Length: 118
Image (cartoon, rainbow, N blue to C red; front, side):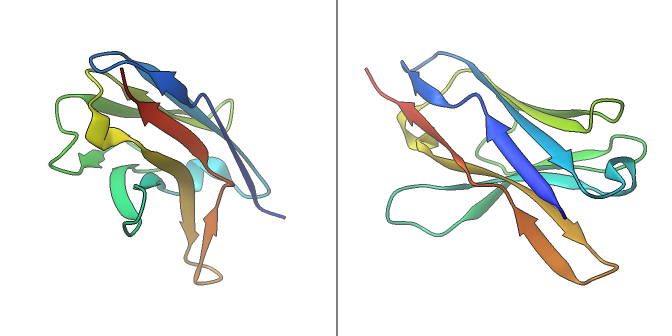
């Protein structure tokens, strides 16, 4: 079955950096776009970044452009989110996501907490 396991969250001061990882299994990883979403406290879940399966095309939410970088290693079935110049408003639970069109279903990891605070 599909499994997505995030890691790398934590507490960081404003201006700091964190790198999130998402290890995937149960599907042909290189065939699917992968995404990172986040859900700030009391708010709805929002798309942060997405990377295509082949070619590595990326797109980002305006709020993170120039600060966050999504990447993937298809040999390791892992997607990453490098987060730099973190701001308090980046505080959220971050989720890894894949949408498998063959079954018309979204899959989510368990989430990892990122807290940006001094």
